[in-house]
Image 1 (cartoon, rainbow, N blue to C red):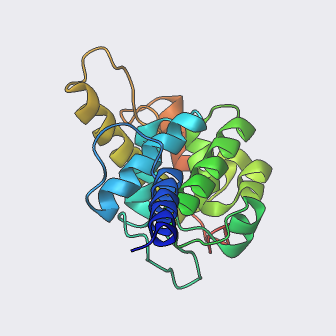
Image 2: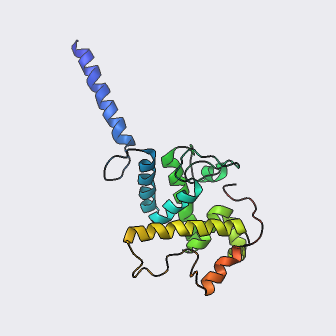
Image 3: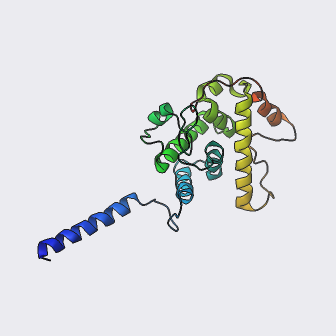
Length: 204
């Protein structure tokens, strides 16, 4: 092979290496082996970028899609974090099936909701499900059995993941997004969304 052919092969190899470096996940550790591994890495990455608890992001994905990046709801919500077209458009997500874009959009939206509700994760999670306008209008007075069940499930996964992370409950205090399940104002407030009919949300 002549010099021209050799130069062409070297340029092609350099181009291939550049592409691999460009699209490699910017996270440390071993390369992901499965879609679940890749999803978990992007969830951890964007949780750190947007300063959202990683366990909360994981819990949302647990409930929304069970970590299936290709799931589509009967209302058209798509992907790991079940983004609707309007929400995806607002967040600059072009391909809702693409793992990185879907997680980035979902975590960005969750982070925005947490700021909107001044750090109240219970209201932020409820708004992720029911839409921020409904929760803004009624706050804890918003009445929806499905929204309450959604928040309860997310809270259960969140708590389980937090406990798995630290190994025990000693010194952790109350990890439940729903507040004290044994009673008190947080418990009563959590149940204020327990009954009623659910309307359209950002995902439905």
